[in-house]
Length: 538
Ligand code: UDP
Image 1: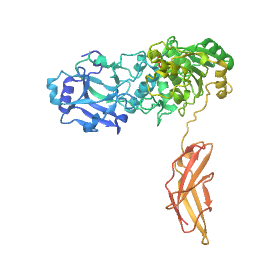
Image 2: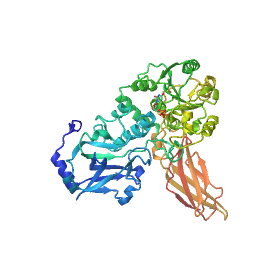
Image 3: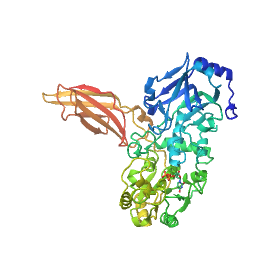
Image 4: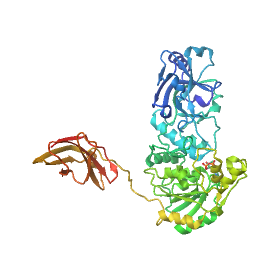
């Protein structure tokens, strides 16, 4: 048995007996393969077949038991990228009795999280698809603590950012390739399979052009809990700033270059009267970049994966994303979406090069670096003449790659003008108080009293008490929304009121039943729930 796995001792014979007698047990959450995470006891993996194995025995459990729907298309997504057909998880089934004829199982004693990394060489993908989802999947299940072990099954090597994955647990993550060295049949004592998608905010354009996810469920608070954890692991203290404010220009050194970077740095320094420094993934350690960004007032960078580092910016900072010629900033918004998540409290500014003179193209490079020489002449000409890349699907659109890998001479006055439209005085982290928004509860003790005047006029006096949680809150503005609906009608009369009672007389008829709906609103846009409907007869 390998050294790697022997840190936690288990009783081999007891484990083998449990596997043979009880088989595999699986209980999952989620209704669809796209939102499912499964917890297993005694899930096994054949390193020869490269398949997971579920052993049936007297006590085995399989929930959900999908029958052949398990293959339509899969039990679950192994990466956080939704429904990607290269990222599916399934297992093959065997009777536990078959173990007699199989290689001796090697047991994995650590609690395991089994998942796929999506694109471990691209920093945006590393954070968005892997690190945040792994971190919050581990938060979801209490036995996935720092002693848990990560297993990456996508089949890649470590990749350039492996050190970041190592921060998530105290144990070395294992790659698919390494499992072979552990044994022919691995059995995970306890494991979780799949990743939570709850923190992802972007879809990359596999089935429709790329854009923000339809239903974003993460806010800046959870993002910052994660970055705080990462910074602790990197030994970077949060408030070590000398107090001096500065701007960071995050540059790329291989492609998609800023051609007049020195000029840009000088111009920013002069305009905002701040020190301006340049960093790149090639020339700085990851920790140094995080340390610098986490205290910066502004981050300026070409569109590209390095911009995901705005995760680490302090509240109140500004993100300036530069787009090469013919690339519409509205069509590529992973970093805009991140910066504008509720509670991220970042200012986002996009600048686009609109001047053909200021772009340098590379038609003769290989296709994956944006070359177009392999296309037929007419198509090459069309692309070169085009002033905007039309919306497209991921990932090999040659016109997109051609434009994405241009170098740009940034038009300084135009850039400063765009930044100045948003950043009026000095940019920078505002040491603001926590401004989390809390929602009101239901209004309480709603009552109504009707009075009828003659045969055609009536009044309805409605009163209620403040929501219970309001007593404990400082709220700038409190309003009440009241809807009055005649029973059986589809329409209602809406009112916005400042007090806890009101007498309605407009359009109130005698001898009629009204449904009254009341909710509280904090600070104009924090809508609370409606209280139970109030029935009022005039
Ligand atoms: N990258 C870099 N310097 C460069 C070009 C790329 O550090 O000059 C990094 C980039 O930040 C990303 C990875 O290399 O993490 C892949 O870059 P690519 O251009 O393929 O992707 P994009 O940045 O467009 O997402």
